[in-house]
Image: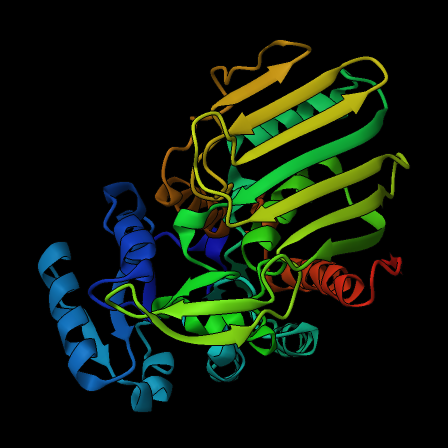
Amino acid sequence: MTSPNTQTSPIRVGFIGLSAAGWAANSHGFTLLDPKVQAKFKLVAVGTSNPTSAAASAETYSNKLGWEVRGYGASDVEQLVSLDDVDLVAISVKSSDHLEVTKKVIAAGKPFFLEWPAGRNVAETEGLARLARERSVKSLVGLQGRQSNIFKKIKNVIASGKIGKIHAVNVNLLFPRELQAWAPVTSYHYRHITNVENGTAVVVTAMGHFLDTLIDTVGPLAKVSARGTKLFPLTTILGPDGQPLEQVPSALPDHFTINGILKDSGAWVSLTVRLWLPLTPGRRQFTVDIDGDEGSVHVETNNFMISGQDPDVVLLNGEDLVLEEGDGPKFTVVGDFLKSALFAYAKGKEGGGVFADIEDALRHRKLVAAIQDSLLTDGVWVDL
């Protein structure tokens, strides 16, 4: 199969999990409609849970794109991944289905895009990485926060020595009440995330996205510890009418602190994570302070989704750190991050593209698993 960085015609995409509406449509579908993306990627097929929704999705994207997009139900996944005119299979389904769907794609020898967390646990991610390695199948994983030009610039500031040796990294992160996800209240849309066996605990998913961008910026951790408290031992599932449907036990703390030591500098890293506090005036959703012996970087914003919008405030030694010509633009929507990741994949790592693949996802999966294990054992330190 043609390597991405040598392919001159658009990479033809079959997308499993792309319906006419919903998360994938609002993020990935929106991105694939961008004219600049269409120059490099062409959506040719969609797969959904049933033939009816597949036909509706195919019709929607055929009308929007101006060419035929074919639809396939869940029972026809093997047919979709085996299509001669599909060069890349994108997968945006529940994490409980990541393993089985992606195994079929790899068996067909097709490169794939897979949403984070790339399986329910380390064993599943490890299995996918091994299969992809054995078949020499290329991959892109949805850890798109590392595409941020803001955090790339901070990474370059650190590498240049402008703040000296890092001594401490402090983070305060809020997943607000309005999100209606995890404890103590979860919308019925997200019912599956309350079961830690699905690999969708906050420390893996939302926190996992944030942590990937942070670690990509400041460097890897040598060891981690995490402790917290359950202010909300039960999680209420809300129905479509906003009324309680049921209550389930909260598996993990809803307020917790992650401590770690950076591998390269020995710096102390501390992240405090809070759930359920409301978005009252003045309450920031995340702040990051990176302190070196010669200077500091301060970041803050009112959007916890680090892979969906660049931060509002970025200061280097108390002054605005601005993106200059050549740094790239500031990203304002998730599509900006996804577009950048797709373009990086099209270059290929051998062509200078910087993006997360299944091997990167496996390393990160081991980190968040270590944090979750430490939370469940009252802060036991875990070497990485």
